[in-house]
Amino acid sequence: MVSTTPPAPSWELGTGKLTPINEYKWELYDLTKDYSQYNDLAAKMPDKLKELQALFLTESAKYNVFPLDNSGFDVGIDTRTPVDDSYQLPFRFTGKIDKLTFKLGPSQMSAADKKAAEEAYAKVNN
Image (cartoon, rainbow, N blue to C red):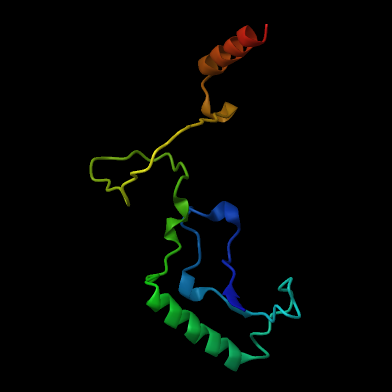
């Protein structure tokens, strides 16, 4: 198996600090002997790595996955930036939403809102 591992921790997704995809390190593993992907064989088997990279490029072109882009990891992250009239939706959602849950943590609530929530919770539980 050939793969890459994004060289950034998950908490940096959507921060703009990610390494460009073309700079990711390619890795090669023999999953029949190393299912945990501990022993990277890329340096020991460069010809096999190149063969599988070529296959990846062929299949990626075949299934229209280009251009590869890791800048879209910020979907759903609140960046606290306002949306103005120039914003264009990346896609149109046409599905049905059966349930929507908002989870507000203390850091997102004003003192007045927190007090109101505590009072409402007390009312329900008394």
